[in-house]
Length: 117
Length: 101
Length: 167
Image (tube, rainbow over all chains, first blue to last red; front, side, top):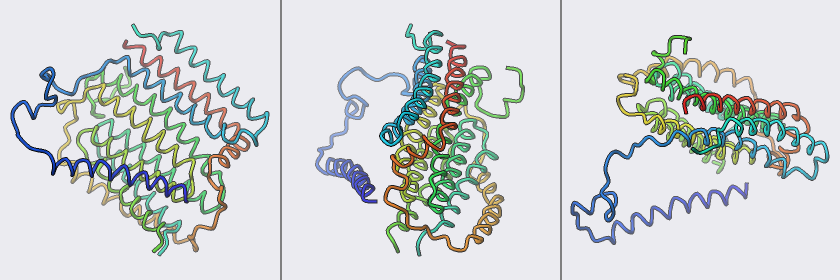
């Protein structure tokens, strides 16, 4: 439970620091509202269009493949921590696991899912 | 008053039925998808509280596997949702009434 | 009241309220953000139940990867107001459905009374740590672990086939 105390402290810090920054700047800032002040970017190109742009569909397949390999990494983590007590059997086990996933990776590569045209 | 097993099970039941209500009432396919995720999580909470209650790690190992299955399901499910939206140009489940693609 | 109970109340209230908010939102993006809050408070409940590994996995995989994918899909489809299905008076309809389902919660709650003593027993310090769950998973559950790799392989193949079709 002590380790969660540290996480709670970090959570507290993460709440309090932006709050202090926002409240303090609210009180300290001089306020002159003009048309160019309230734009998204005060200096730079004038924004046009909507912020809801459809972004490139090629990112999507990367995101999907990322989720699959994220799960793989999540399985590697307790394996690496418990590695000392597990012995040779766990090495073979993880070798099989990675080999099966490598087949999928090779397929994705061969189909050109990872290419950026 | 100390929170025992029953309170955790009650929270899990309430979350599960919120998910059921979402699946039954809503028409937006994304929200139905997320309600299913919520139901999965409610079941995970049951597994973990029983694992703690029985002092047995089996429940946690099963939750670990469920999370992996949920991620695989999310990847496939969302790519199907995107294909359906491209074909039908709609997010309402009422429009998805034919088996033909 | 023990500190555990206070944290339990906070986390479960946040989880239930944001779960309810999730099914009443009209736009899926706000529903997704509300579901992230539910997942993080569920991670807090896992932490209270001494499941330290699952606490991390819940935040990393559910709040991190799966919900990012959902939000990514919503933004990719560029869901506008006119794309949303016509649903009127969502809050009323959802509330009525929840009220109809309430007796089910009561029935399930009745079955909990069978458990006479619901107090959690004392567990050893390393219960649910990364090391102990890893030891357990890779010895007792080695076969399901290998099956998961085949499941991930199939989902990878499916993703490539489905996503390549429209590029």
